[in-house]
Every structure is written in structure tokens, then in C-alpha cells.
Length: 261
Image 1: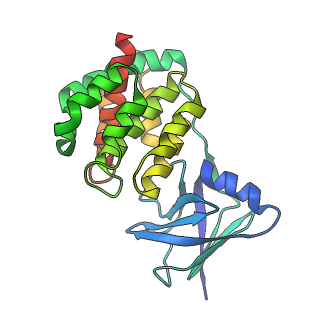
Image 2: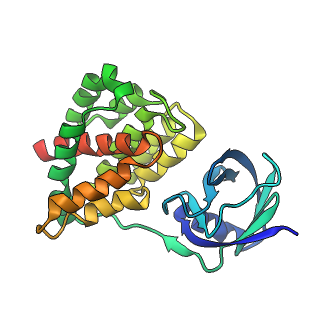
């Protein structure tokens, strides 16, 4: 009998796809597997269905248990309330929506020095040191498209480190008021994996995983601000092999350029 798993959180990607599925089931395919679950693509949108070991995020469907696949590949079907996959079903009806807000100007002003200080202490990702100076120059000139050309697909990891840094740049740019359309255009042109591009497209919309948004929220009030930020940053840096640390580096150099402008 197929397993039934209840979802806890759903990101904006699933929310938008379920609106389309309200008029009838829509079909997609499994495109990858990882320890906590699997990746699927429906109508060009990639999302992850996983257990509680991953954080809520814009492309994440987080379930009470790890969805167990009966096959490495196959079709998935999405209805208005459920995701059907080889070997089971995720009930999404009661999932809490993950729709983080864009930080306020006050929150961003409070967080920017802490992001900048963090990247000063941590330095660039090891696999990006050779290209770091040109990246800093492009960011200093507010040329995110130029930085993207240097960073795209560069480095190691399921999402390459260069893409993770770029996600931080796009995210901070959106938070600071740059038009979403311009940032989305940059994300869509990046030459990298489909999974990385999905994260970049959501960064261009101002969304990332939950602990990233917690960094900005914990930056206020002023009392104990630095200590709380550093604790949250340590959590972020544990995400993935190097993804969290690279994302922090992108946010940090973006914050430095923004503060200097």
C-alpha cells in the first residue's frame, strides 16, 4: 500500500503550482534524489519533497517523514491537495505556507554591518579565491550581471559555490529595492544546473531558506544583536557542504557595497 506522508511546510513554488492544479491534476517527473527526499519538476518549476531534516524554503515541500521512493525516476502528479510520487503520496492540505517577507529598510540597515563584518572574518569560499577580486570589483560597481558572468556554475557542490554567492547577491539586491524583473532576468540567463537556477530565481524574488531570513530578523533590537546574528549565521553555514557559507559570502559583499554607496 502506498505510504501517505503529511506535509508540514510548503514553499511558494508549491503554492503556485497547486493553484494551477486546482483545475485538474498536473504531471511532472522526478529529476534527482538526495538523502532527505527527492527533486521533481512540474511545468518547468523544480521543487524538493523532503523530510524534516531540511529547512523550509521557497522550493521546499517539507514533510513529517522522508518520502520513500519506490523508483529512482518516474512521474509525479500534483492535485490541489496532494503530491503523488512512485511509492507514496504527500498530503499538502494542512501544510503551513512559507512566504517570507522582504526585510524592512530598518531591518536591512541593522543587518548590513553584521553581514559585512561576517564576510571580513570568514573570507571568500576556498574554491572561489582565484576569481574573488573581479567579483568584488563588479559588486562594487553595482554590476550584478557582471558578477554573475564570473560566478556562474563555478566551484564545487550540488549547487556550485559561485551560484550560492550569486544567490546572496541577488537576495540582498532584491531586499534593498532593486526591481525583481531585472534580477530575475540575470538569474534566468545564468549558465548552470537547473537546480541552481531555481534557487537563483527565487533569490531574485527575495526568498531563501528560513535561517537566512532569520538573520535579518535577529538583527533587531540592538541589544545582543551581534551575538544573536552570529548564532544564526553559524546555523546558516551548516547548510549543505558549503552552500550556506557561500550564500553568506554573497550577502556580505553585497552589504559592504550597499553600505559604501
